[in-house]
Amino acid sequence: MAAVQRLGKQWSIAARVTEDHELVTEGPYRIVRNPIYTGMFGMMVATAIVGTLAALALGLLIASAKTSYDTQSSEVRQVAANISQLDRVLADYGSETKEIRDAFRRNIQHLTDEVWQRGSARSVILGSPETEAETWAIHVKILQLAPRDDIQQALALLRRHL
Image 1 (tube, helix red, strand yellow):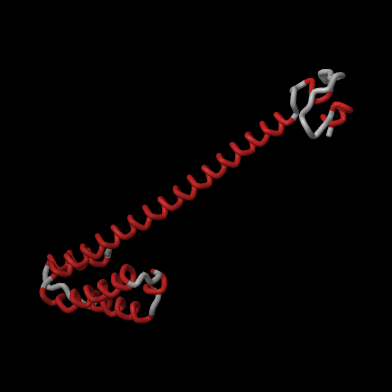
Image 2 (spheres, rainbow, N blue to C red; image 1 turned 45 degrees about the horizontal axis):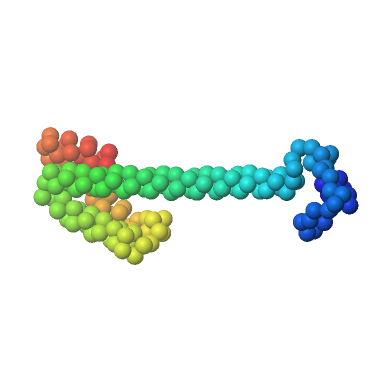
């Protein structure tokens, strides 16, 4: 509005040159020849800020997704290592663990099928009464193993930490 007021009778919607034209150098025109440039510059700055914020938000979203993926990947690797180690300890313990190992494998296969093939949520599977009952039965059977020699005694100590 200040620019229009300073132009006075020279202001027009259409671009034109009049006989009594004079260069206006007061008000906003002392800083810039055409105030629309200021508006255009402001829009460019705003666009750059919005673009930067969008890129920042996208970067944070990607970083968050990668962190979540890395955490879950690490957890899956750790669980797989624990499962493998427990199976190896039970195998080394002796033939009396065959029934426990078979039940353990069935339980792991059931959990794996539920999570990866059917896409069920981890909390739903691990919190189900069926899964808890199967896992508890295996746990009780492992605790009931009675070591007969020093090797089995050492393996019994190891299995308690898994």
